[in-house]
Length: 250
Image (tube, rainbow, N blue to C red; front, top):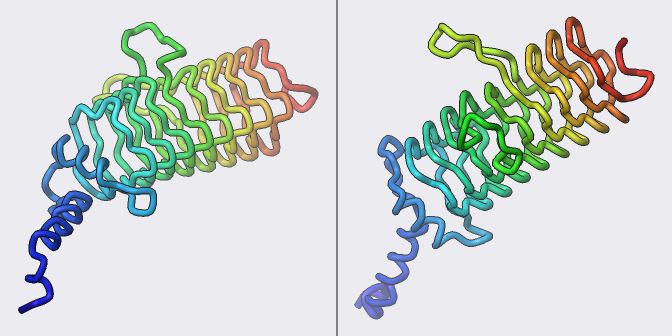
């Protein structure tokens, strides 16, 4: 008798666990919320849930714990991620356009090369600081972002080569990025493009702004204390009330 047949029940139980941990491999098929939740429940620290390259668009994923999950290249277009926790998750190259990001936690997540266009970060037209998403220590290298992320916390984030440049919605309206009151304390913004962005009241204390582009941006009352401003371009920027020492452009 085959060794697999001697204990059929134990063998089948083991297969069941393995199947539950492995998300179905049909990359073209959209995942369901049940499949996602089941995979997350079976995940472990050494074997996190893997949704890489999967279609997770237009789902209500609010409040779900995605900590340390793998979502590299996943399509989350239009999904509700309100209150979801992506701490330490791998979202490199993921599509996050038109998502809902009310108080979403991306602490130390890999968000390199993501696309984040026109998400909803607030429940109403009124901007509420306690609803802003969190990006503390996140990797946002070369991300492409066009959004209202006012009061968001990017402290310690690596934003090298990030693009916050303006775009158009449906080829009609010019849309700008809002980082009003954002915390960029100690963030790395080397060669970042923040042209025509709104950063009034932003805290850029100790941020590395080497080669960053702030052309025509609103930096009113922004704080640059201890920031590195080597080759930073402030051409046409609004700096009324900005503070930060003698290296701040006049």
